Length: 334
Image (tube, rainbow, N blue to C red):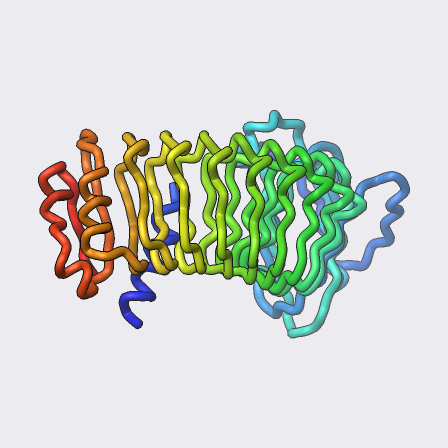
């Protein structure tokens, strides 16, 4: 059990690499009537009785109705796409008792981060200008982003989503939907994707053949029986731990740096073309000692640190991992 936990932590580690201007604030503790007119509107419901934190960026007048009689209004400055961290504004609000409250945000919002707020619902369908949405670690059971066609970054991991439709989000470059309950995920229309993290779901298949600019893919801890990455020639990081893969072809992925494929049903692995590979986590599969020796023989002599992680089995004991060490690889056996 300790060995499984170690490699699940390692699966996440292998894939890790993801200011305010002077703003005039007007606050009131009395209920204020807001006329939405043509303003964009975002609503969310929270059940927290603690501090809620929301980060936003956009332009023009922004109003947040916290749903408990408190309203904040401020003017946001225009910012460039790459200045999110410099121009986002963090809103903090503390509720005095436990109760479901609907928060209403009106204004021209392009970036919204509302993670870890015990949200039970989030409606962004009326804000079509949204390009960045982070709503991870909440209690969302559904999320409709079909109207957010210019969305480039979506992070919704750690919720209770059973479905996620991103077919209309063709501008997406980063998608993180891990730790949900998804049984399917269609990313064939998302041809601009460079980062896809969908680990710890219930996926039985995943078609990434159209995602030819994909750089990082983590689909670990699902129920995949096959994974075709032959067309993902720009991949540098691939993690597919804890699936049911019987084969994996990475011959076309010559840019791979990190490869994690432990705890599958692989009987062989060809890394002869992966000349820049510096970290390989093979974990537990079904390679014989001779197949393991063949794998060690294929490893290249790269500069710098090179690590390979394997599980201690009878076949491992009978293999000659000194072949890898002779090429400068550090072998970790767990």
